[in-house]
Image 1 (tube, one colour):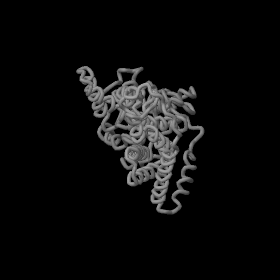
Image 2 (cartoon, helix red, strand yellow):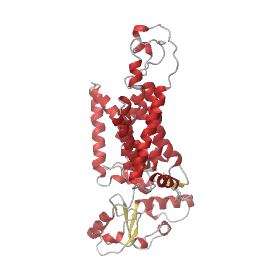
Image 3 (cartoon, one colour):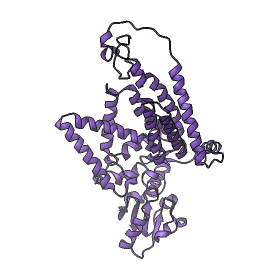
Image 4 (cartoon, helix red, strand yellow):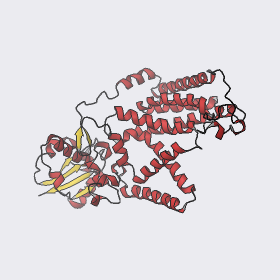
Amino acid sequence: MDVGCSAFIVLLLFAVWNYVQRPDKVRLVLCGLAMGAALAAKFTAIFMLPVVGLLLLAAVRWGPKAAEQAGPNQVTAPDDPCHCGSGRKYKNCHGKASQGKAATPAAFDYTPYGRAAGAFLLMLGIALVVIEMVYGFHGGVGRYIEGMRLVNGDHDPNYLTYLGGHLRYRFDDYFAVAYLLKEPIAALVLAGLGIFLLIRSKEIGILAKLFLALPPVVLFTIHTMFADGLGIRYIIGVLPFTCLAGGLALAWLVRSGSIAKRCAAGVLCAWSILAAAGIYPDQLSYFNEMACIDDPGKIGLDGGSRCGPMWLDDSNVDWGQGLKQLSDWLDANAKGRPVRLAYFGSFPPEVYGLPPQNQNLSSMDLMRVPEPGLYAVSTHMYAHTNGMIERFRQGSVWMRITQPRAIVGHAFYIYDIR
């Protein structure tokens, strides 16, 4: 749902951007269809409704029609912002021919703002029809509203979030840390540079800046305030916009004409490719090199992924993947030996000849001194158990001090206790 919702949010904003450039009925309908698809994908998209409304209103002030009305003959104060949305002072943009002339007072025209509000309501109406279609025209909107009420209905108030080796009820910086550790460093550098260039740019209009900046800021803020700290997947909707900012930076480096900047662009691209190739096919478990800041010796072609469980747990490292790889490893290295499994996931392990899920070791089991035998501990269980030992100051730290025989698929720590 996270990826699907993110894809439709990007589609929605693209459709709205095209609509404000050249408003017509077809583009308005496309906006409504994209809005309905986003809302139907995940309830998170509800927060895009006020964003779209604000962007439509902003287009009245800084959109193409406002720029046309603010032609070269318009009279306004020299130091006022130019109506074309360039961000420049009027005297440095379209007002060079009329510098020094006083602004002509005019009555405020509410009509275009009313049209923008009407367009938004029409988009929302079409979106509601899409929701009805998704629910098979069986009270879709009512069922949708009821579904929103059930969001986080199964939330466990006693659940402890894991971050940096510690367990707490909440970390305000959880998603910021997750983003800084789970994204490749090259992508972080390009995104940071792109945001700086976007803010400083005189060529990119105010409306375009709002389209690029407002949605990710809203999504990130909402998740930071209300979402459980379960994984970076919650802010997947932010990532397309950081990638767009990174693309802006990359284009600037390549077009700069500087050999040094072009070389930097090549290095960053190569670094991104290496990060993707190094972690393949275990992309879910990726962490960048900053994760191993306290243990640089663990940095490898997979970045700092070996240090990931010291920072984050759950879907950041392990979502039940790796069972097939574990089964293959056991067949090749410990055939016939019984294995004690600490598994985090929903797929039946017995499908691959592993102990049934109802025989899994719990975190409480892992906190005890282990008996001799072969253990396969999922990375989530490894991280969460060590966090429990840290928080409650009890239990054996055997997993920390025992060198694993192998790490299979970045998802299972194999211990051979003699």
